[in-house]
Amino acid sequence: FEAPTQQQQPEQEKVLDEAPPAASGAPKESGSSPAAEEKPLSYRSLVLTGYGGYDKIKLQVKTHNKLQLKAGEVLVRVKACGLNFAELLGRQGLYERLPPPPVTMGMEGSGVIEAVGDNVEDRKVGDRVIVLIRCGMWQEVVVVSADQTFLMPEQMSFEEGAAIPVNYISAYMMLFDMANVRPGKSILIHMAAGGVGIAATQLCQTVQDVTVFGTASASKHETIAQGGVTHPIDYRTKDYVEEVRKISPNGVDIVLDPLSGSDTQKGFNLLKPMGTLIVFGAANVVTGQRRNLLAMAKTWYNQFTLNTLKLMQTNKAVGGFHLGHLTDQQLITKTMEKLMELYKQGKIKPCIDSCYHFEEVADAMRRMHERKNIGKVILLPEPKKKEEEPKSNAEPGEKVEKTESAANKKKEEATEEVKAEKD
Image (cartoon, rainbow, N blue to C red):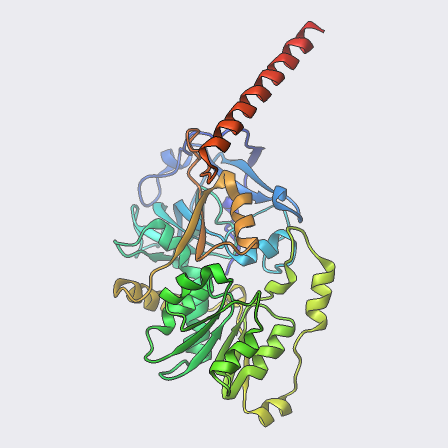
């Protein structure tokens, strides 16, 4: 994908202390409107300021004194953004497609077109669209090429729209363009409760009699089974290779591997003759919120290697997939059109795990990092209202104790302030 266009780079930037009012000054009419474009445009943005922990992502306000769309571009007011494993890698400096800090993260989202540039004929102001770009999506407004936007079905929510591009395009291309899944085949899907895992499972249901083995922690088994996983496997307490062999002694036809390291070798060995292994991630290198050199070294030391002679002798195929390196926009557009049609037919529907406001991005990343999510984690650009409090599972008694403790703490702080003034 192309990098965000030049006018997305701020002329003025400041760290956000309080949520500002909704950004104003964005052009409201299609075409060139000098009066509207000359108004300053301010918007909130999640900026990766350096590599490391969750604290490296800062919520900032960016301001453009003048905004002019180039030919073929559109201005989109963002309503929802997707969080992907690539962003966890990017925060640690492990995702090569992300430009160096400071940089606004985010590859996918959804929103409403607020202005269009010259030579844009198939998009208009007011269109609800999905956006897929290289980075720069985690902000209230984005300027993108019109061909990087996709019209949303009327019944689709903004949260669902933001959940589709990365996960469903990846799953569709791996299953149908690379692995050529067909009726009667079997497949092993790792991280089956994640975004790509659920997308792949749903897409498998569009093909008759496909057996799905899916790895996930035990607490997620009921959900993924309802979603179409034939045989859930708890990877934390059982050897998934043994579990697959118990049910299918000859192995499986397809393995989708987002793990890398030693798991790639296991996946290759699990393939039946004429089977296909597709590697599309390296989740094993992320073990904490900061970069773990030991985990990286272990993963790459155990990296699967083979030669073409071995491929011939085993009658197996190995493929790799990385959406960030796929630059064929026509292929991406055709795939999105197929996915939108499947959505309209009710054959696919994104599973939204949770929604977090921009202010809560650390909590969102922590949830995905700890693998607590079932489905997609969504980020909302809309400022969090002050009356919105995080949901708590504490018992009534605990809440009272916490409230009293907080009140006492405030009293102590107030006393300290008075003392300081007297001193």
